[in-house]
Image 1 (cartoon, one colour):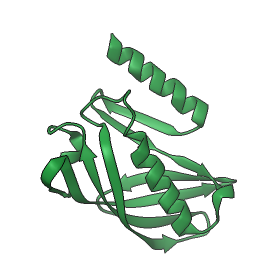
Image 2: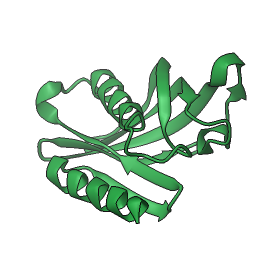
Image 3: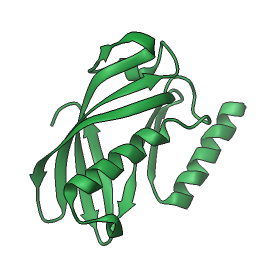
Length: 142
């Protein structure tokens, strides 16, 4: 019952802030942030803002332990491809999961002391529509 309330609350918050939230399973939530173009037109600044917004989202106490983070660190961003209405960047980061059985353990990265998972890596595709930059896809490969 409590989980249903959390999911409903997350969906309402998502509608209010204009971001995409896709629920695959109760323990696997994929959040795809967006950001207004007024912050900058520089792809590196936009990539940094989107990545921070993405990781910060997972620090919410409303999320289940399986996906919640205690902390994160962005290590490296590189712009990979730039087109008229999109760009692709790579990001290397580390996360401190709130649970030893966290979904963050899966995929790439290596376990480190104190609950950290280091050297996580994503390719991120960003679409530019009007005044909004939105993450379209995050994956470990193109």
